[in-house]
Length: 187
Length: 177
Image 1 (tube, each protein chain N blue to C red):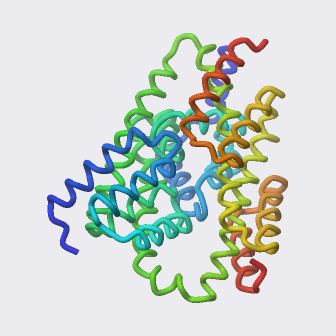
Image 2: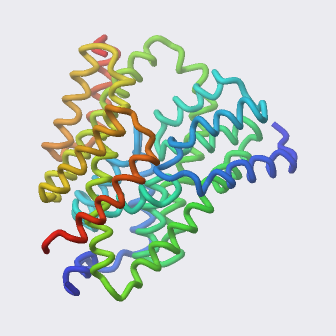
């Protein structure tokens, strides 16, 4: 068990500048949602996390208050570089993009209502939804969850996505259920 | 915009008091934020709120940055940063200390059970977010095809998402979406 827990430490230590650069990239490229970019940079490009670790962390972020990707940067920053790491990751994923968004906002009103911009935005929005769906599929194929986990993921998807049930209620049912099932599951 | 200290203070406590309630992210709180910003404080109209929300979805960075834009609308750049820090600060501190405590747990099996239990919940939620966004964005057969193609490209290849978004924007201009 001990060796398995330390699997996240199998890569060399992550320098502060590298940490900041990675989260800055996630923040600045995160058009249409940051999650697909977070998975791409952390799992595919840097190989700092496996698909399974990424899914586990996102799960943790869901039950904690606050935006998921903001929590993700706080948690990973702290894991790799302590409190300074959290601040660096937060600055990269949140504060620098805020400045970019304010610049965009200044021009938005004049540009957004032009027909050509609306058509481009419609196309990009459709693809952005696909990026998130594809990321979820990637997390499943990459982490190879057991059948019980697949059933739970499907139930959560149906409840929140299709039935549009309130998120808090779904979490209140699904999280204790998932913990109870994992508790009893053979390992 | 001249942001008086009073307005900044108002923004700070309004968003800070919501921060710890944002389980599952800021989107879960949008109706409440709308109520406070539009109905209670009268800082903007409902249409202005909707425009800022759309911009936050489109722009780079976390979608939670809708909070920064709301603060900016009320009190300029200072308002943007005050709102962002107020909305994300308390929740970030809780996450920081909660996960530190969890990672110090001597009994790794409890942590392992928790992590393995939460992963499928997260995957189901990510899928639900994508599906909800697709339902809002896909108003034509062409748009549905763009969503499906984009999902397939991300799931099956390592192509950079920026090219997928760029190609889809061009397809949109060409009349596909």
